[in-house]
Length: 126
Image (cartoon, rainbow, N blue to C red; front, top):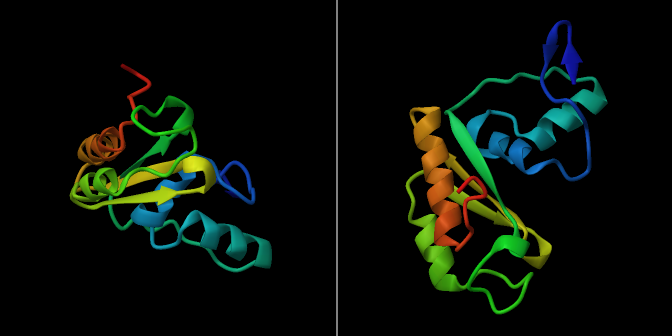
């Protein structure tokens, strides 16, 4: 979505990339609302409520699950949701995204990493 020299989102899809999910926690309008408003020709805003971060949860790289695509166990979800200002969205087959907000982006990133690690998702950068 482009407005003059500003690019809000580079594409419009039915299922946005994992990184676009951060808008669900960090902005007044989520990626879904922004797409709907753009399609309808309505005004959009990118007002940020809080710095946020997202980390994709990929069942192919998840340890400790009975089978690829199995939902995380309840105790893992309890631990993940115990991280301050966090949320987890699980799609079909265990794929999902860990979301977090914080006063600073670096803290939000660490929280999202912690949420993912509590779901036994290894950090791809480690």
